[in-house]
Image (cartoon, rainbow, N blue to C red; front, side):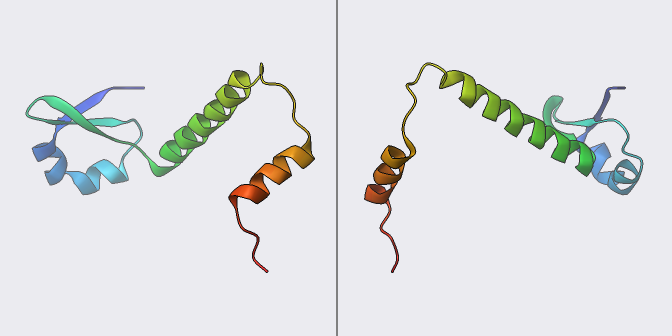
Length: 86
């Protein structure tokens, strides 16, 4: 993956070309400091999905030491928190 760094001024002038030919991420700088990354939509969605999967895995690992609970106990706890619509 090639690293492309571009100022916001240059990116603004070439945005159509950048989006059309976006194979690798483009790092956008403002006054020389990185501020944003331009990536293809499918790459962004895949990254979000991976982050969500990793968060789910982390949640499972963090709860390993907790005691198991009966479904009825959880259901009763939820019923106290959320009023049931009739």
